[in-house]
Amino acid sequence: MAEQAADTRPAAPHLGRAIRARRRALDLTLKDLGERSGLSVGFLSQLERDLATPSLSALSGIAAALGVALDSFLAAPRPASGLTRRGERPLFSTGAAGIDQIRYERLSTAFPGQSLNAVLVHVPPGYESEAVRHEGEEIAYVLEGSLIVGIAGETIRLDAGDSLHYAAGQAHRWTNAQDGWTRVLWTGTAPIFDRMREDR
Image (tube, rainbow, N blue to C red; front, top):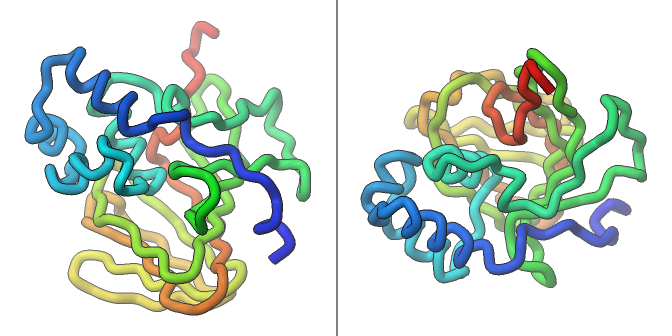
């Protein structure tokens, strides 16, 4: 895919260090953060040592558990309006630059009362996310390639043109088991980007 050659916007430098600093500032243990975010202590430990790359959903849960906006951990653009154009949306990721990693193009914006978020997700070959659960609902629509979604003990394969709508409170994970990149339109109600307040 042509988009994959583009430069990406990585997570803020030293993502693990930033998460650890915020956790310690709140006097939380890894166990506390795990209970708040629904992630395992082992994964969080690896993440804080920059040995693991979180999905956007996982990073959103961590940010919520730490009482900060997701944007504080991402070097992601804030669109000035609701209009985005093909080829003009910067890519960003939640991992270190220089390796194949899951990448995102932000489609949604923020305005008073906004509840939906949407991103184009570029999933590299061999990628497997950690299992996450959170409030709300999600729709995954595969534009290119194929995606395996594990949810509530069931494994569902989605090929180009297939979609899946599910309650995000069920543990779910994504896997790209094929050799090429998969491109997914993701829409959900999880507050993955900082919402505008009514008084802004």
